[in-house]
Image 1 (cartoon, rainbow, N blue to C red):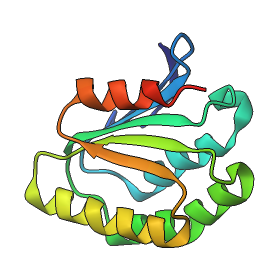
Image 2: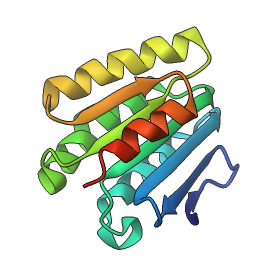
Image 3: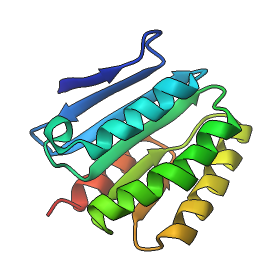
Image 4: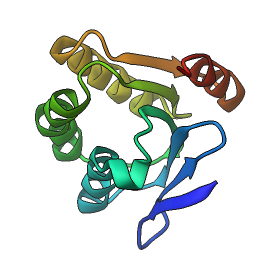
Length: 139
C-alpha cells in the first residue's frame, strides 16, 4: 500500500492499494475538523486516488468527530462527490466499537442515502468481511 494522507497527529491515515484498486481511510481517536475535510477532499483528486472509486473506511477506534464535520460531509462533500463521480462509488465502513459513534454513523448514512440512494455503502463488524464485500465490487 502506498501512503495517501496522514494527519499531523496520525489520527487519520490513508493509503492507496494499487494491487486491489481501493483507498483505505483509517480514523483513530479524536478527529480534527480541518484534517477530516482534507482527507475526504483528496478523494476528489483522481491523480491522488488513481481514479479508484472504492473506499475501505475503518472507524473501529474513532473518537470524537464534530457534528459540524459530519454536517459538512453530508451537505458539502457528498454533492461534490456525486457531481464528479455520479453513482460510481462504493464504501465499506468498519463500524466503531462505541455505541455513540455507531449511531452517529447510521444517521450519517441515512442522510447520504437521502442525497443519493445509488451510492453503494455498507457497514461491517470486521475488516475481513468489509474488505471481501468491497473487493466483490471490483469492475
